Every structure is written in structure tokens, then in C-alpha cells.
Amino acid sequence: MRLLFAESSTRGYGTEQHIAALATAMTRRGHDVRCLVMAGSPVAALLQAARVPAVFVRPGRTRGLRIGTGLLRLALRQRPEWMISNDPRFYRMLLAARGLTGARVALFRHWHDAPAKQRTRELLSRRTDRFILVSRFHREDYQRQGMDVERAAVLYNPIDTARFLPSPAARVSARARLGFAGPDVVVGYVGRMIDAKGIFTLLDASERLLATEPAARMLWVGDGEDCGTLQTRIAHSRHADRHRLERWEADMAALYPALDVLAVPSLYPEPFGRVSVEAQATATPVVCSLVGGLPETFDAGSTGIGVAPSDAEALAGALLALSRDPERRRRMGAAGRDFACARFSLERIGADFERLLV
Figure 1 (tube, rainbow, N blue to C red):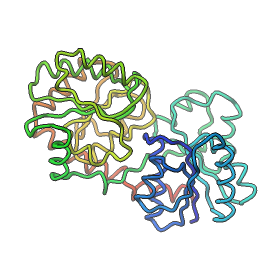
Figure 2: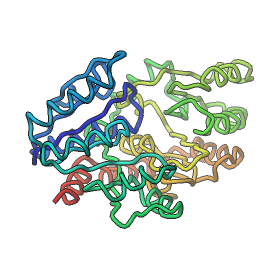
Figure 3: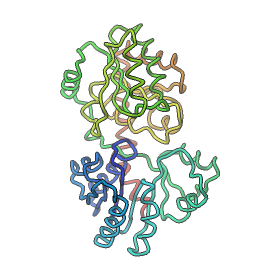
Figure 4: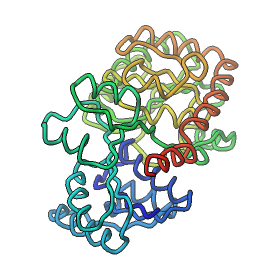
């Protein structure tokens, strides 16, 4: 099939990485893929690394005009059978281009809030050829809020499990680069530094963990509007020297091997949880909030532990239990690798997406 993917964001979080991973999956399956993305963006870097053909739009004041023009030119040149995006900026553009190109349109939605306007509800649920949500929770949540989901499919985010994989050499290298010693038990957080992601619940839990377990260390990776507040609170902690903060990297594959446990303490109902799957792919057990689509990203008791959102005591207890039991971490890590490969690999999700487009 000829497929055109479009993404206008200059960020590199899970929503943006989704489109790069899906385009990569379909390229590897032998389809004729083209992408329209922002020049210099993390998505552009991921596509270039995966050798997926892309057209780049320069950021700037006239970005909207150049995006629309670039999309139309690319669509008329490639004559795709499907045009695909998870970016609301492209929703109406793609539907308008459909009449000129004859292509069908597949739109993804990544947010847990149902669209507020009736026009948008109609756009997503009725006017698209395929309307796709990223978890069972996501579909049920939209249905509860009154949206017509009869035609909505569910397709999980794909993860390149060949890139996120266990590696003893990568573990040694990553821990040395970050300053962690061999006996250290490193608990990580990866994502946006905002309150809704549960970072302050995790900080409270980490104080209990660090006070009880001398080998425990905290690694925080990300950026966001609450990063400064988090840094200030860590600076005033009795255990400030056992925390390390790192900026977000679009390519996290080299960082996960440094971790012994990943915490995903979100307070709000995320539709999915990409970092949870990435960590498991590297054989790292997870401790996740039981909210939104997160429970669908791990096998509670086998590949990780689920805790109630905003419960710092339960979160600390789960992290402490794993910190003190290396054999349990090893078993969970091995099970997590198998779980991630079976359910979320590029091969699995690419094949599922093909069936949706038939």
C-alpha cells in the first residue's frame, strides 16, 4: 500500500513517537511510506534513523501555510491509498485532501478527553474512513462520554523491541555515564515533569524508599512546567545526593538499561503508557498506577506491580519490595520482555494495522 503519515509537532513525547514508530513498522512490512514532519524535530530524527522517507517542513511563523501546501504536494505526487495522522492540526486538512487525491483517511486520537464540540465528534467518528483509539480503556471512556464509538478500532502503540532490548554492555555503559555504582538499585521516572504525571507522589514515595533502602537511587528523566518545582523540592531533601535529573531524550533506548525499576505514577487516566512498554522491552520491571490505559501495558504480578494513583505509601512499598529482591526483578524483567514483544512489537502492531486498512 501507499501510505502517507503526517505529524506537525516539534516535541518527541509518546504521542509524537507513535507516528514515527507506526511509519517505521509499515516501511519494514514493505509498504510505500512517505511522511510529512517538522524539520529538526525528534520525530524527524527517528524517521531518518529508521530510513523512512520523509518531507520536512521548516518551523516558523508561516508553518501552518507550509504544512498545508507540503501535505497537498506530497499527496498529489505520491497518490497514497491512505493518509494517516494522530495530529489534530491535520484532521481537517487530510479530509479536505481526500477529495483531491482519492485517498482514504485514518485518524488516531491519543487524548482521554472526548472532543467537546459536536463538529469534532462528527469529524472523528463518522467522516473518517478509520477512527483509531490506543487502548480499550480509551474506547470505553469515549463511549461513557457520549461519543459514537461503533466504528472506532483499538490499536496499541508499536514499540521497536529490536531497539529497546536487554543488554549487559549497555547497562554497564549507561550506569557509568550516569554515575551509578554496581550495587546501586536505580528507580527511574521517564516522561513529562508535570503534576498530573504523579511526579510529586513519586517524590514522596522516594523519600520513604531512600530512608529505608541504602542502595536505592532515583533517576528522573524529562522536562516540563513543574520541573523547577521538582528540582527545588529535591534540593531540600535529606537525600538530595541520591537523586539525579536528566533532560528528556527522544531516543531513550540507551537509558533504560541503567534502571532496575521504572515507576509510572500517573494521576490522570492516560490512554496508553508508552514508557511502561519500553521499559519492559529492556527487561525492566514496572510499578504503574492502575488508571486509564496503563493497566493494559503490563501484566500485574508478572511483569510489574500496580498501585492506586496518588497513594505514595503503596508506591513506596512496591518500590521497596522490588529494590530488596533482585531475583524477583530478574523474573519480572524476563517476563516483561516477552510481554512487550508479544503485544506491542512493530511486527505485531504493523500486522494489526494492515488488517484495519483492508
